[in-house]
Length: 111
Image 1 (spheres, rainbow, N blue to C red):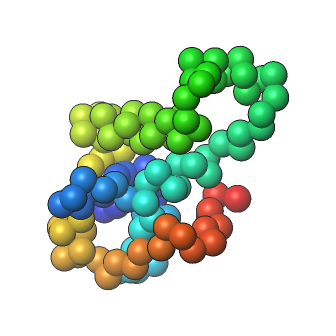
Image 2: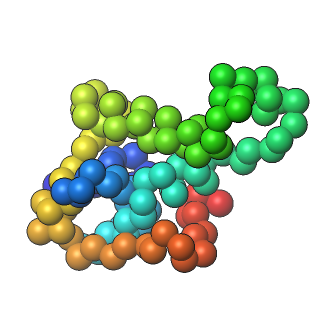
């Protein structure tokens, strides 16, 4: 099994999704997918933001991020080149897995 960083999703038995953000040898570091996706775009509350996200007016800001994760889940489930879906149990049987806690200061490796 090869888990692709920042692309593949890993699902646990409770319906939580994770993204691998670091891999070294047989060690894999996972973070909650919604947290990781929230660091993809810098959201500035200006006119450009209002135009780009007009459909989200009067909604919770988290919906933008959840829609990104939902999009990734749909495409990872299809396995058509936009990432794959892995079962956490299977991943843990092949890798030594470390989780980044949701409330830790998260320094996204992309930055």
